[in-house]
Image 1 (cartoon, rainbow, N blue to C red):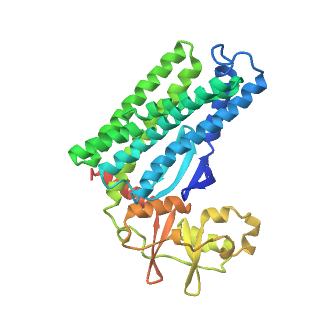
Image 2: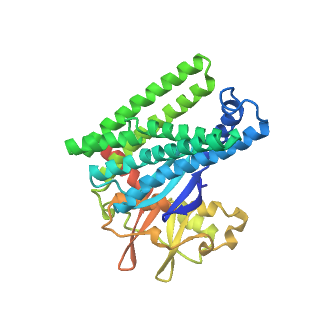
Image 3: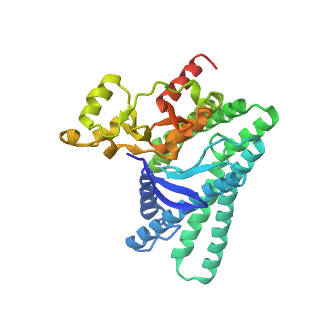
Length: 376
């Protein structure tokens, strides 16, 4: 099951929402409607339904601002010829998916700076709008919302400028260290380590706030701290993976003696004669000498066992398409990006329109883990 669904496409970039986003959306709405807006210093005498409407509008606009923050990163990436496969909004904001790292620290610096600058711009815009509304509109509802959005955008900018990777501030720090040292790995290690340190401080502050009775604030700090810790570790590991895999070609790792299946084979025979016998997770499907697609064990499990003898491989296979194909001279990092995006977990390696090998995500991960173990 996919963990996200496509929402819109902006600047040619698909925007997806991770299902975890709804958790934080609900928490933001609840916090605003029950605690923030009804507080004596904000808007203490409105009806409960008004608070909930204000909360929903504010939460939607907040996440629109977060999307603009990520789009600013993506725009700088695109004008510097860095492909963006998409943007995903998830439990703690959003992330733009770069298919390759910046080639130099200058591009990295400009990309990282774009997000906080956008948040500062939005914070200023809502601040000015708040002044206008306060001066000319009698209803407090609109200027309470704009005041909240102004504060939150400034807060997002400040939080992202914390010098811990992979926050924008950490990327700015990495770009600076990379510029002066010329060593991307060292720069990433230092920035990630600082990110972990910041995460530990946030978790500690969260537990302290929790003990002192600020339960909601404590939970926010704890969640953000654990998120930043995981993100810092994952980002450094991804950088290491890119460095290792970019030096290896597909032909060095692919399985060359590929076993194929006929397009008309029924699923009961496919399971008995191929999956049980060879214990592979997938098989290319051929009709005569033409590659038609790929059938996986997961595809078979989607069909009721009582229908296996009536269903042919061509009915359930993934038809051949560009994101399932690769060339033997492609590097493994390019292959990994394709594998992650195609949702099948493997690539078919083609040369002169003929199938010469198959590469799986597990093969790549095992190679990376082996090279990590031996210290390469």
